[in-house]
Image 1 (cartoon, rainbow, N blue to C red):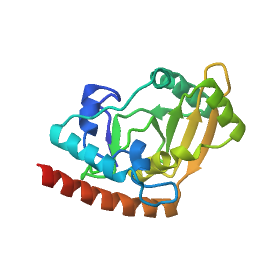
Image 2 (tube, rainbow, N blue to C red):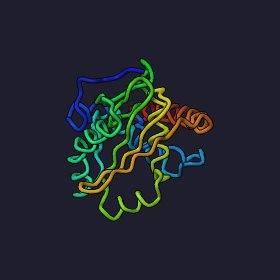
Image 3 (cartoon, rainbow, N blue to C red):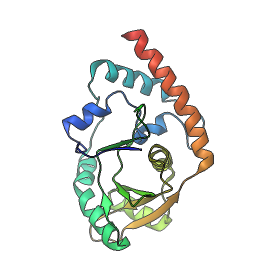
Length: 200
């Protein structure tokens, strides 16, 4: 795994580095939770092809809630460190190898085997997460994808809202899903390269 520590997440340099590269946060656009091809794959491929040509990362819509969540991330990370008695390493992004054909931007790496994904949702959503006691299925591709990119064995999903107890759920590596992810990512990256070549 290649860790890029000298680029701050959210910076112009970070967005530039992400342009045109499939990221774990969008792996749900490549395959479903069952490992089938996603109906969003072609549109996502076209977006990445455009980014690769222009070198510009097309930023998605960011609501006030999303901005607030980003601002609370450091607070949630510190709480996690205290709760689990660990040190969290923050990095700009990770690649599986020198090819840098895919990436993830983890909210933190823990030791040699773990990582974390932090969500700071609305109050009602956080209560819903607490009552369910598990990670929502909508984050499966992102969390398993982050483990795929980094080669790590577990990932802690954290839901945080100030003044309430956090939800911390450990997700372990799903080797069957990894195989399905590898197949779909392989096909997607080949298609992306072909698309870029056609429009260059």
